[in-house]
Image (cartoon, rainbow, N blue to C red; front, side):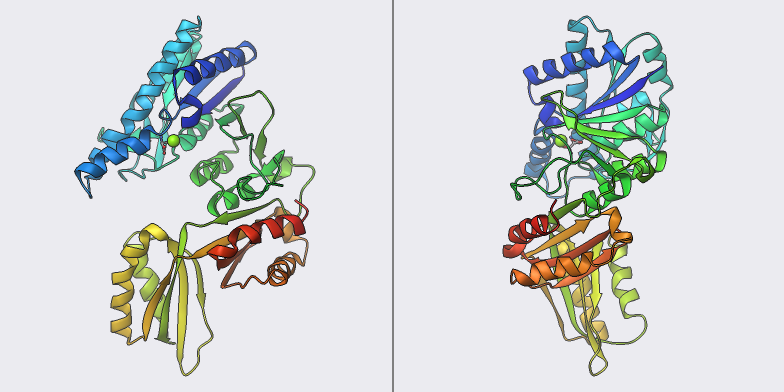
Amino acid sequence: MSLVVQKFGGSSVADVDKIKNVARRVVDAKKHIDHVVVVVSALGDTTDDLAELAAQISRTPPEREMDMLLSTGEQISMALLAMALNELGQDAISMTGQQVEILTDKGHTRAKIRHVGADRVVQELRKGRVVVVAGFQGVTNEGEITTLGRGGSDTTAVALAAALHADYCEIFTDVDGIYTADPRAVPDAHKIDMISYMEMLEMAATGAKVLMARSVEYARNYEVPLHVRSSFHSGVGTWVKSEDDIMEKAIVSAVTHDFSEAKVTIIGVPDEPGVAANLFGSLAEANINVDMIIQNVSERARTDISFTVNKDDVDKVRPIADNLVSSLGAEGSNYNDDIAKISLIGAGMRTHPGIAAGMFKTLADNGINIEMISTSPIKISCVVRREDGENAVNMLHEYFSL
Ligand code: ASP
Ligand code: MG
């Protein structure tokens, strides 16, 4: 028996005609797949619009109420799609996260899935129905509705695919697949046929927006093959699979950029044990994600520590940094949100020397200064000035012949 989970994003269900189009695609899929489960996002910009309504009422709405509000978006699309399917003669039933039993922790607005029940989904599938599930939402053990963070419908789809032991999970979106770079910044970018979970995870973490990073983590942990493809035509997209299943491995697979981070520097901190632990401990306590970190060599027993955070978190960092500056007798702090993080990703880097050198040389030859560097076994990231960002991705894309 074949079973596939198909997820349609907000732009794929933006209006009634698009919903009808999705219904036709699902009916087509059902001709050659025994069981189809569909996960939907909210119509178009509904989630943004709902958040905007809340913002007009409160700057700090209770997170529980935000989840009550935001989870309504997906309930609209699931019901409309189930109606459209029934209209085409395909028996279908919609279900909320709670009805499916998508159990999460209590982290309102960014909850993590703990368990997927799915017994009812299986019962409905056995009746020959298509089950349409509201993405992005779950429920706590206490019966409180939660949401999974922006873009969370991807994670709903992959988690369901894992729980149902689906053959694969298809993510239908408004692009043709995963590209070697963001085509809006790099005109030469092209679609990748196949990429490993690890590379996709690095891409999602360094600015590629096609998939929510957590959904890729989930897919890797449960080895759910992902197919990212267009909802507007039937062409093949990009398959995300485990590295062992990929025959032709590229050395460098993609170059990504991220303009959403800011750089914070604490100047002249005493070079002694416990300083970094103190700083990053306080940031972690405040739930602030730190990305890159560098500490300079110390002169006169003092050093500078720089790190990057999301621009939205800078206001939360300031009081923590000020506190540290005064308690340690550091010289001060500064903030720069005019930066771009440019990353090169490729599983082949592990075995091919010279990739980092090629990246640095390309940037140097184009007069682009590197402000920070960080690496993983399959990724090299550089922070450069924001104004150099587009040029940097284009030059790297060309140098590595992507
Ligand atoms: N509707 C939610 C959002 O816009 C979830 C999703 O689209 O995946 O973030
Ligand atoms: Mg959306």
